Length: 356
Image (cartoon, rainbow, N blue to C red):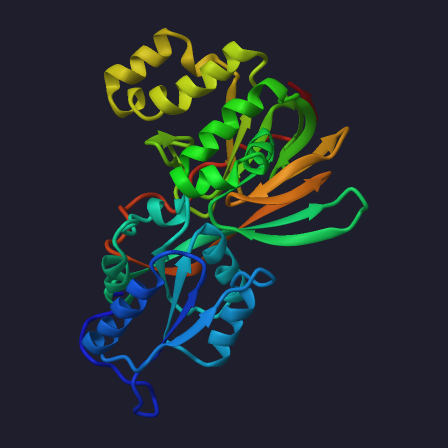
């Protein structure tokens, strides 16, 4: 559905209205206000409702307020944490969301080809783009004291090394160099990363026990730095994608890097490259293991592990269950997705315990 550029009215004959949920500490808010004002006039919208996020509420309550106000468009201005919180507050509302990337990684926006360094361009897309329904992941986690919490994820959740890397990222360096600060944190975290054991089950398949450095549950596949973590991931395929990182030593970490930076990003793109992967045994290596399905249960064997959602540190957990909520969020994008099968085959197996 194209939002169109002509003036449209609601059932009472009034002009449509947008709500802008924004992080007031981010740079670019003044430019955002000017761009929204221009887009309102161009597309026949009335003055927008502006709602600031807070440290206590990064967007969930604000989204619920926008729903109560019956706005026609919701604009999320911030990073991945802001849009994640907004999505949680919009559950079932069906209001389209325009993304204005003002964060560090902006992975959700990048994977949807939203302009990352062009505020006026992102605003124009929010008011006039195509509505695309995308999946939402819902995570129920258990804390060491037995308490459980439910969270929303749009990008990727991590247990173990990935979360420790997020926790150890230098905030001052992050402000100066953006997502490159995560690379610095990752390099520093590798020497201290201790593998741990987990029991995990995809859908109603068999239970596996693995020794891992990290378990990643993703809704999309691309990372900053031109890295492709999950080549077959799609944000609207009704599946969640799971990656187990299982390096045994420093050489194993090099093989992880080779997989996501060279094999996935370069070699898999051509028939010759795929033949080279086969000839060099790339498909048989176990440092990076993929699976996909509708849900996954993960139980940590031993000490609780660090947990992160969409680049946000979330403390430690002992277990988690992730499920996909297909096409639960409507986002404004520039082009419709390429035609592809609605679902890819899941990797479930008969129920039994497998030691890996």
